[in-house]
Image 1 (cartoon, rainbow, N blue to C red):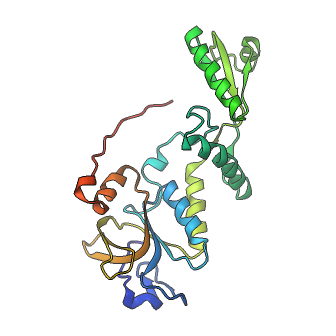
Image 2: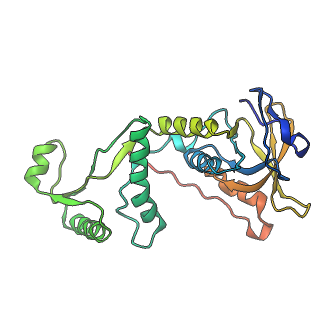
Image 3: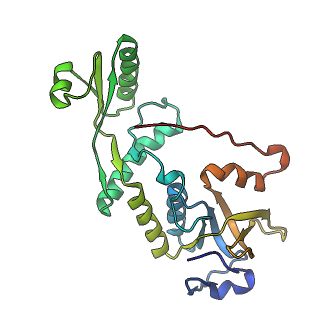
Length: 267
């Protein structure tokens, strides 16, 4: 599918995405073209769009500026399934890690998505690092995350090339996942449920509907420079590094934000 083409209220009953010649209709009466528009085709946008499209009566479009899903941050990450060790008892990250890792393992196993429950070692080389490890251990225990220390002899026996002068903390529930295969599954399942992916469709304007109907007009620009506008009852901003730019299209100027980028390195 190359780009989002004209999808207006007048074409509600026989909308067409021209590059795929895919027609669809709906008996559900609504004013907007779609119930949901999701901006950003990374793993987060895909997961949200897939879940929304599974709702009864949903009509979801996933708008992505590139020619395929997951070409930015989602394809440049460590692919770790995190155990939830670091973020504190009240953090949403902790809650999502604890629930999400079990759901992700289940999803991957059920749908043959490449993954592995590798476990993880956190290694301390001195007393100060060992104190930090103890805090991680105690926190993990307090939220019932599997965790335990390894003796120096056991660690050396299992991984002789790893230097651990002070101690090793093992997280058995940490793992890894093939993010590309995961995104391919999410995209396919989304489309199998009737969702539409609009690729090569960068968003240029977002405005609230002015007809008394709550919702949004989303304008995109195709490769040929032609602009297309669709309407959606609900708009989801999952644009990753460009989420601030999308947010600034929606919010008044006094609530605009400036993005600050930082480079992270890992081995």
